[in-house]
Length: 262
Image 1 (cartoon, helix red, strand yellow):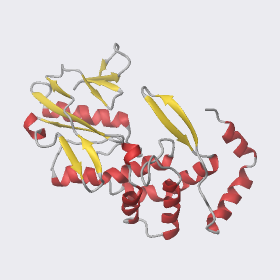
Image 2: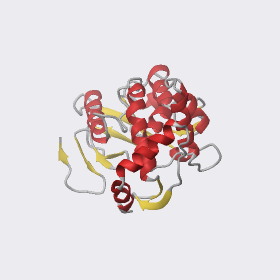
Image 3: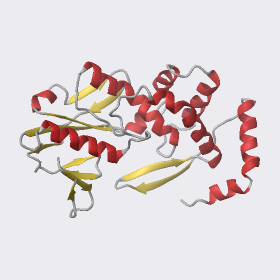
Image 4: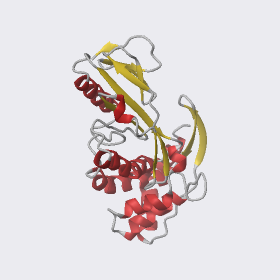
């Protein structure tokens, strides 16, 4: 997909912005249709691309409401947040593994988990309820409802991979899970990047009770299956399906050679 739509929008940038502003002020804004296509990343993914006009609004909404939600997220939520990201998550995981293994002298167990078909399973009603806890402006809530209603994988469910708002929605939707794991299950060494979340512990017994958790608060099956463990920094593992990882080094997963110690 090229950038032709951006160029067309830019040719009459001021006119398009004034039109969008007018629709918002008069309460006439309606989210437009999506352009749909497939990418290989590495598995086949369905992408829904909003119009440039709608994407401008997505950015504006995220700039306004994201800081309020961000302050409430746990420290170790790394997806789509300023000063966070995948690389920070990798560094944090390595630091925790080295600490628990006492500099690679003891076995450390790790549990890698993810949410099955996460973007397709996000419930609109539940997400709006979570947003309403921090957003009191009815006009903003109406915009969020319109954005959510513009895309469905089945009735009342699903958010598009292509929207900037979907990244924020994902963090809002999974924050109750983060809080539950941290505050109620008391899993100390836990972190999350988007819908993939590893936890590490000095003993496999810590994970015995949570192979499969149904987290009823968000109505999503959380499949928590043990994927790997580290032993004296030697056992190779995968993290976020993108990296080959040891307690002392990491590299992009597809590059089988060339890992260098951090």
